[in-house]
Image (tube, rainbow, N blue to C red; front, side, top):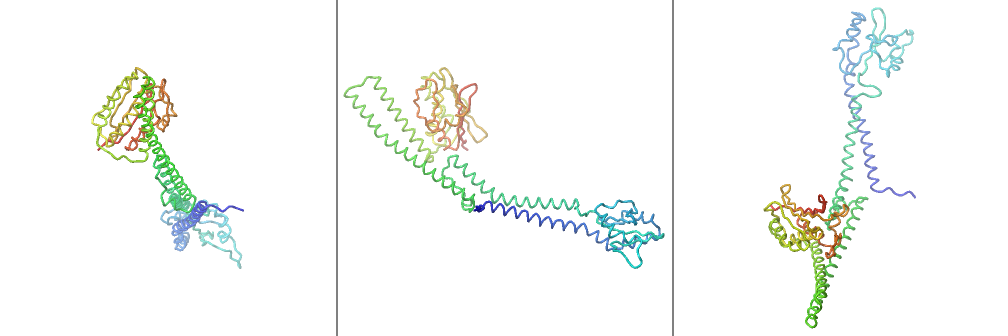
Length: 450
């Protein structure tokens, strides 16, 4: 059984068929219009008194006078060609007869210029001129720019008709197919950028063809993704809250055990360190899920240069433990609107990551400046081992970590993911680039406050 053509195929076939029919109709109409315009002068000349005037000139002055009359540019109107032919088909003025007319002229025009029987007269489609010496000439008027194979004007009309039809059909197809596909593409891109509430426009999903079916499938997929992400966020929040309670009980039990029987200092420090790591991991998970699910609630006008200066001062102690120096450069009075705590958390995660990967004795540089009048660009650059090219984007994914030489893997793998969420929530972005001559440069862009 032959499968039924799809609705999209049927619609395309309809448009193409309509285009062909429209081209044929418009082409024929154009040819008729052009031909009628070009034939007007010819018909007027044929119905006029040119033949009588030519006979008068021939009778008075002979062939030479008629030849001069034929050459006079004022004799004939535009678009008309005159041939005065003898019995052999030669023009009196020497003009060659167009090849496509030679057979026609031989059969229906020249017969009257030759000897005729007294009781028979052949068909004559042109008047006869009789010279004083009795020579007969066929007086033939032909359209100058019309031929069986067309003319430049007719060809131009057909091309113009084709271009008009193509333009109209292209506009119809673009509206019927290109526009909904472009709208669906925008929805897909929005979903890819993390806007999980995005759905296909109703004008696209309501179609009854394959494009509409694709849009409905996209909506279904987006709903599934939104549900899965919401479930994951809820699970992470629930787990984090559930872990906080036993963690607090562990800390209380450790304190009580210390009162009864103190532990050796190394073991006590190890337990406290592990508890602190668990607490940090839980806090990072909660912070990350909250940034995914909730918009920023608190926004203030603040100066990024002052926030970075405070951050550098606070992180100097950690930098010293790694034998790393911090240096802040850039412009002053760089203002943004946002949540001070979240922005500090984002910059802190990036800076601490740079300190952790920077080799001993090296410098971590921070630079802040205005860019393009409406943006602030902050770069944090280290001289560590850097990041492979294929990992420059993936390091901002949750739990994606690259171990540095001597790294004890104390991080949770959420620091840079949290930083990206923070800066995107403030209308900015963050990217990682290779630094010169080595290391990693993290570039952060934020919209400048008006």
